[in-house]
Length: 300
Image (cartoon, rainbow, N blue to C red; front, side, top):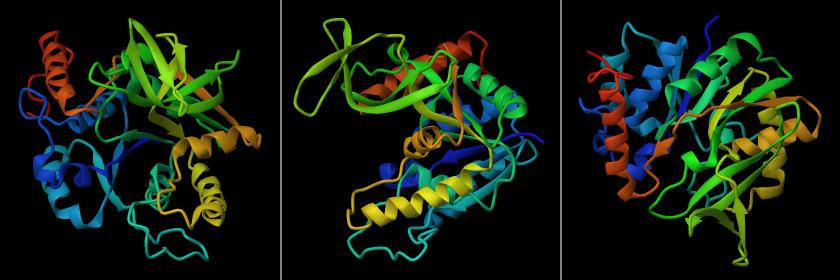
């Protein structure tokens, strides 16, 4: 059975105001998502599942169905605020979704095979999809998950600080811990992260970081459901609290349920953290097309 690609796109419309404004970066108007789907199909993924907001379903399908029809199976799931809450109810002051791990949980009834998860607006590179497909086809089990480890130096922005999940990798090549560093930037040629107290700590350019490209066995749904209820028990009263994928990965490791294998890639990540990043993304894609890594029209 071919693996599935789950694309976290529920937050897209809120960032852009409307899907019509989703930015075109490729020479024929391609979005970053188009490149991820193209790479996934090439690597052997058999189905694309989009997590979206219900109110944007029509717009979303109008954009993607014409391109993907006949090329790959598609499905759509909705991240609803009241899904999987157990005995809890949504507090009146809660306006934001419950986070990326809750988004995955919302796809529980759409996926029965090993699957990968990516953000909608990050460019991950062909190498990462090839490595992930190989893992999902050959190694993914109820006690073996994975995450693609990017070299930190290939994921920073020159336009400001970025937030990254810094991976500690053990001798077996598995994830020992993942620490969310919310303020990473380059200063005097050195990459540093800054703590809340203002102290700065250097990080090597080849430090592996997670860009939210994960590989899971379907067993993750049951685990996530259990952890989400535990999360709500503690955080239901905090309107800003979010249930993130690294929370699930950390508990998976610390409770000795299994291991998360780090799949190293040399791929150059890019995304639009800042408006000013957009021209660079466009230039990078143009260069890849020019080098023959992508056609100048992905869906022709």
